[in-house]
Image (cartoon, helix red, strand yellow):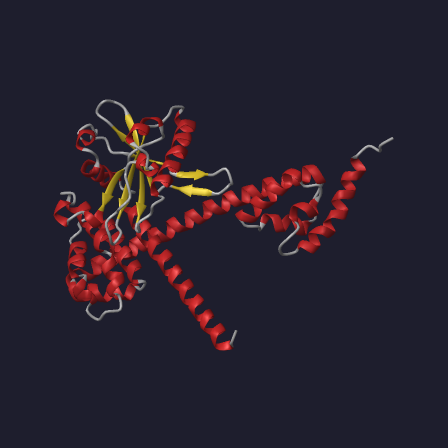
Amino acid sequence: MSRKVAEAGEVKQAGESKASWERERIKKVHDRFVRRILSFPILVWRLLKWSLPPELAALMSDRLPALVDGTFITGEGGEKQADRLWRLWLTTGETLVVLFEHKSRPDEGASWQLFGYMVEAQKSFKEVHGQLAAVYPLLVYNGDRKWRFPTDFVDLYRLPKAAHSGVLSFRHVLVDLSATAEEDLPADPELRTLLTVLKHGRLVLKYRRSPDLAERIKPLLVKVADLSTRVYQGAALVYLSGQAGDDEVIRTAISRLAPGHKEEIMSSWAQEHEHKGRQEGLKEGRQEGRQEGQALTLVRMVEKRFGALPSKLRNRIVSADTATLNVWVDRFVEGEDLGSIFAGGRGSAKVIAFKSTASVRRSERRPARS
């Protein structure tokens, strides 16, 4: 292979990696905004009143929904999180647990993902409340083309209808913003504006390097400027600036289109940035806390079997990431010595050296065979 061909391959690979990173960044921007919208009980209630089947919406109580923890710990020690779980009260006295999931791109596996979250939500709810929950799935989609996958799980099997009654199935509500005209969005002005921003926010991404970006997104910015609730206003601006990848782009557009509201809008924006930073810090803290707990548990188990650990190995366990800890826990089940559990990766030679100390201690405790 020539040097030029190799360099061209490296450039192509770097370009693909950058494009993949950018797609993931934009996905997170969409997800954050949807979760923010779905963090306000009144907005959730209004969204459900608009999107649920009419016969069910008619049964909704005036009581505002209650947020349910949507974080689930998997059997592998990893973490999954539904976008939002809300407990909804009905006028008949029963409750539903509405499972919200969001997609910004077409995803054929969405129904499978919803099914997994529904199972985990059932387990979690039963542990806390001692009873099963009626989990009701709802998918919010804001892709750039119409959602084309079935909303009825049974359709994924591609079976004749005669076989449908004997297989697992459920149906989820679909809120497809790409196929919903603005005039068909909820009548509530604030929710309508936020969903309009979510529906058309891709315009910022598409024209972010265009000199006429301000004119192209003028209708969106005017709607955002008219929002009476400042926290909603700030959330929408953080979303639009995330699409642009540059706060200055949106700041300049606001200065041109809404100079009379500039200070008020900028204040809302700054407050939402502060909220975002606090939430990310809390999430990181929770993850670190779970990781530290797993590491200390592993240390206790290893020391119970092999005796006190050398400080270097102990520090290595405590500073390991979740994936590495999971590997070590699996090895611990059948591990004969420290080397077989912790060998491999950085510092493996030193770990094997630790074997002599702990294994000798272990052998000294064993009774001699006659």
